[in-house]
Length: 86
Image (cartoon, rainbow, N blue to C red; front, top):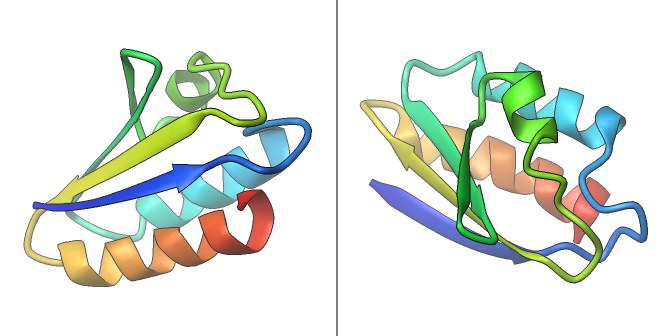
């Protein structure tokens, strides 16, 4: 399992556009993608689940990925967090 931590610096938090990018990228991989914030967990491959986390500016987000292609998925999803949210 890989794990990455991000502090959200976007003033809007994880809003629809970057959430869509994250979900679209996560669905390309067979690994499971879990996103944790403030004691809640979301399926990284489900837009509604991710949006229900209501991640805000300054929140810590932990991305856990487990599966045969977890390294590639971690790199790709991490790039989205770095580009749009951190």
